[in-house]
Amino acid sequence: MIGIWIVKAAGGEGLFGVAGLLAVGFIIGVFPRVLLRILEAPFKWMAGFAIPSMISQLPMSDLDGLTVWHEARLEEEDVENIPNMASADLVELLLNTRLPPERIIDWADQAILYTQLGPQGKEDKARDKLRIHGIRTATSLLEASTRADRLGNLAIFDKILTDENGSAMPGLEASLTTNSNLKLIQRWRRISDTPRRHSAQMKAEPEESSLHPAEGGAG
Image (cartoon, rainbow, N blue to C red; front, side, top):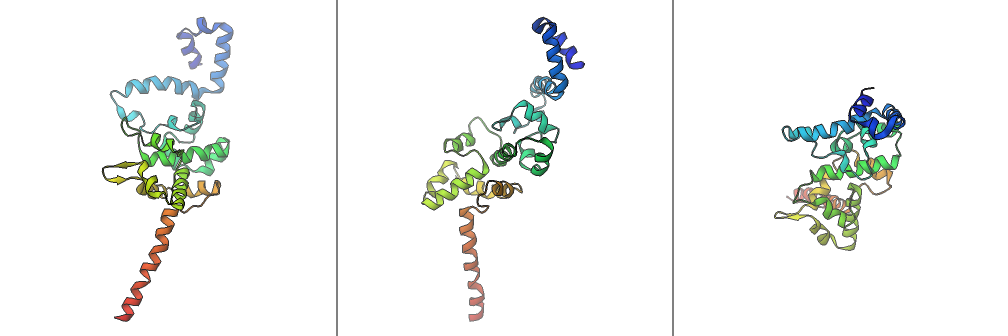
């Protein structure tokens, strides 16, 4: 009722006509959260000048394939921004939202990568640099690294994201593996859950540690 009153007060009757206003009222009744989101958007934008914290630095709208309808549905499950999506209970989302499983998995996969990359700045276009190479999710980055290592192109791959301190790719890969949802996504996609770069390091560690007992015995 409040939604219809707002639409009518804004000149909706003259814009849509009586029949159109009834149709709008039906849509608002079925999807009340959508109207609330539309009304919240301009107020959040205006309030952002005085209170920047009200606007998320990693909004859900940054994810590919996600619309205002999906945002409203995910907010009901307490998923309001990208970090929330990256750490969400995927099983609960699959059961409660009834959205296609592959779609939820893809959003979570993107969210894991975007959370580690941080907010997209005006100068720092890390997401765009990765997309040029076909990398848009956490699993695609790890798979690209594994393939580059297999082909002997890891040094070239690491140059995708560099700064004055060197390449950010090794640290980014290591941070991605700390996410609890990553292994679930990798198993869903039926890909290896151990990046080649890190598996090579793990194989080297036992060989180094095996030297210590021998040295101790010789002493």
